[in-house]
Image 1: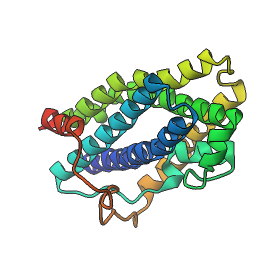
Image 2: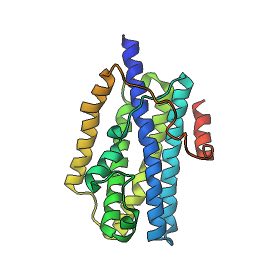
Image 3: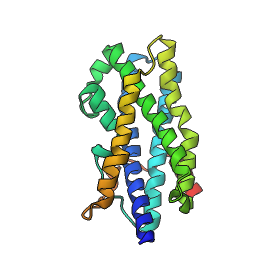
Image 4: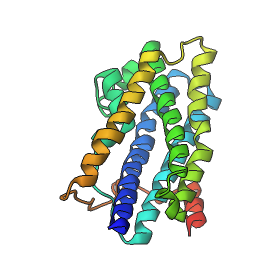
Length: 230
């Protein structure tokens, strides 16, 4: 019973992370497109966001490898477990896929709002990883611990460019109510959705990987991560 509880928790945790990491790097593609159109000469900002995208892809590949080593597929969780999905839906009243990139390019207020949402999401992710690295169940899996250590190392470089961009333009940082929304989304997942999924006897597994339709192999940075987990 204890072994089942531990495995169920870790597999569900990994399933939520693999969804969020995939959603993260595919959503950042919209940000990259907007930056290229808004500020084509801001090479430093663009390079930092491209690194963020590469790291999210690397994290996704590491979780995929973790499941592959166990001969398992992740549970089929969806956007209801996606932090950035829920944050965008609340802040923009639109799904990520439904965001108007032309409006993000043309309107400073919308792009600044998106930067604040991403920065808050990344800071939340860092705090959550710190908690997980102390979690007694997580610490029973050395490979998962190594994955979270890599994520913790990478995270500060993810929120920094967005906050720096806002600061350089005199734009406001996140407000108390934006931080409150971020906290609500996290609590909703932790206290409501995670227990429901954990206790659901008919929770299905994915039949394919999130990136099954994407072209090309994992980039060199992801392959290096796989080597470190072997």
